Length: 286
Image (cartoon, rainbow, N blue to C red; front, top):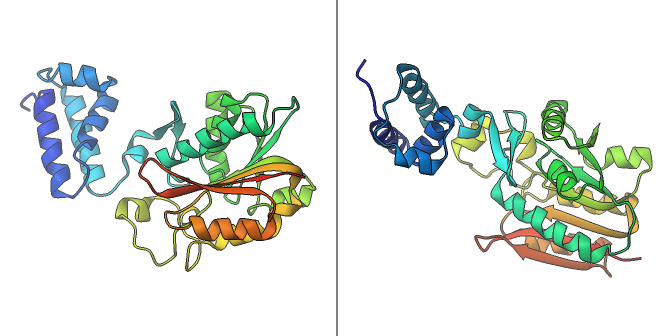
């Protein structure tokens, strides 16, 4: 086999991915992963020859992605808030928008809870554990509970917590049911629930490889927020912080739902880096 150099491999990958309507940058990401180098190192060594094993592995993974397999499933992880989280078909791949949820909540915790006391946080529908684990590692004093209806998802989250050294409590159950059944009240409730209308057509990479359980939420995508509205008063302290990730265009509806149960709370919508409504935060006071 003729030896391939880095620039030749990237040129081939770009052409292959473009033909299948995939992001041409994926070739760089995969080759960085295979060679275990960062982007600057990769680009500085464009004429470096690949071994036969490296080329065959690169060819295989680029082809897999061209045919629809997410890069994160090929590599086995996604980076979130500067840490690597294991992902697979059982969990949603963490998105950058969710990092913005983390930022917003971290900022408000310090302002909303200035008193010194242990705070209890629950991440509902934890998936890979990205929110719960990140919050625990960024605020070690928090007591963090993560729930999910899927035991397969919880297994992934538990592995991520162990790998990253986060002491998290895990419980299986549907939305807030584990908290209601235990009679537990939280200071902070976070969730990135399913919010895609069931008839929306998604990119095939998402549609075919990420769990429908974590994506779809009824005709208008609001089913889970309606369920939260019914049960949140049962599981929060008198003073509480609640934050959701939402789908673009859902801000007004989710704010209205929250105001219907917490009329005196400060409820706000935050826009993401792309200018879309993405986060709803509720600050409840006694």
